[in-house]
Length: 177
Ligand SMILES: Cc1cc2nc3c(=O)[nH]c(=O)nc-3n(C[C@H](O)[C@H](O)[C@H](O)COP(=O)(O)O)c2cc1C
Image (cartoon, rainbow, N blue to C red; front, side, top):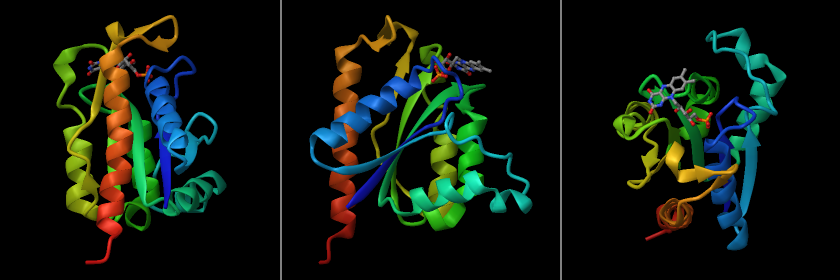
C-alpha cells in the first residue's frame, strides 16, 4: 500500500514541516512506502478552475497523490484555517485524489485558541469527496518546538500515533469482507 505526506507551508523555517518529516520517518521506519511532497519544491499556480489544471507542477503533484491510498497533510494555521497553499492544493487536485481515501492532519499554530481551525478543511473533504478523516490530529504551537526541532515528547508520540492510524485505517478500508 502506498501513502503520502505533504508539507503545505511555504516558509523555509516551517514548523509544520518538522511535524510532516517526523510522520514520514515513522512510516518509513515501519517499512511503509510513503511519498514525500513539499509544496516549497513544487510551486503551484493559484486555482482558476481552468488553465491551472494544465500546469506541469499541478499535474505532477496530482499524479503522485493519486497513487497514494492515504495522505497526511501538514499545514500552518493561518487566520483560523489551513493555509491557502493547503486549500489550493485540494482545489487543484480534487475528487480524483481525495475521493474515498483516508486523510489526516498535522497543524502548526501560534497558540491554542485556533485548535478547531482544521475542521473547515476536514468537513469540506468529507462532504465534497467522501474522504475518510482520521479522528485524531496533531496540533502543535510554538512552545512545542526548540532549536529547529520538535521539543515535546507528547507531540512526537501523537505524530507516531497519527502515522500508525493512517496505515491501520487505510488497511481496514481496503480489506474485503
Ligand atoms: C498570516 C498568518 C496568519 C496566522 N494566523 C494564525 C491563527 O489564526 N491562529 C494561530 O494560532 N496562529 C496563526 N498564525 C501563526 C502560525 O500558525 C504559526 O507561525 C505556524 O508556526 C505557521 O506554520 P509553519 O511554521 O509551518 O509555516 C498565523 C501566522 C501567519 C503568518
